[in-house]
Image 1 (cartoon, rainbow, N blue to C red):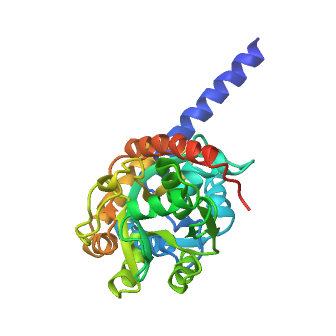
Image 2: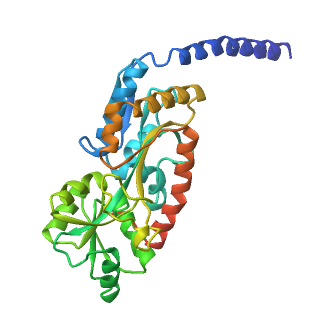
Image 3: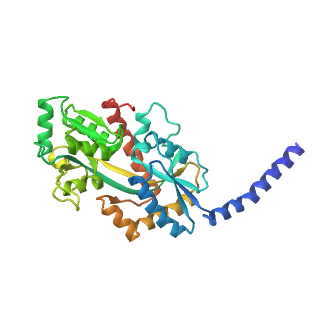
Length: 326
């Protein structure tokens, strides 16, 4: 008994001695460069936004933030790398719509659980998609598309940047809401799908607004609807899906900062504060708004609530449309 009491006392002393050291380490955070994992390839929107926000946060935190692109498997590889990181605040990353709210329903097995292995830190942005057709298409409205699809089931096609992405899921949601049957044509990227849309190989496409607007403004493509709840101030002439009778087809592609489970409230609080300030940086804010996206921000709890709401919604779309990965 005496030996056990001695060991217990020694353990208590060690724990008490360690606690101030841990607290001091968090007070000095960050004291070295931070790694920011981006689950998508360099040059894409997730990568660009990662670099813009990380640069502004780096200035605020006083340490470099290094972008580490780990692309593949619909964002799963990079997101898993974030989940496997140490919860010391030196491994964070971009959390995206698909790996956080879709892929658990889409893939038979994930090596991480978005709900328990990751910690939301701050929402960065949300952005709508635009349903578009060729400029010489006979379809002038969403109702025209629905009428044509009902007249010829399984004939009309829509492009996407890959199975399970926001392009695809928007189309599947539209099919379900309108009670129509169309052909899904997945491409390796959204730009490849848009190229074939302009070439006449497919009939339509839901594309993210920032990518759609240049071709729409150039007169190569025609916008039929936007998937946000209200019209965009950048394109006030494009009606919403709700205005045309399909309020269920509301889609906002979103992304934000996440970290591995086990991060302390103090670390998350510091990163959240830095992200919120970075989003108000004039350059960062302008880049988000100029693409027709909403600036995010807010608390970690608000970001977590968004993910919790989105996951079951898209699980139902995946299930109803019987979507399976390639």
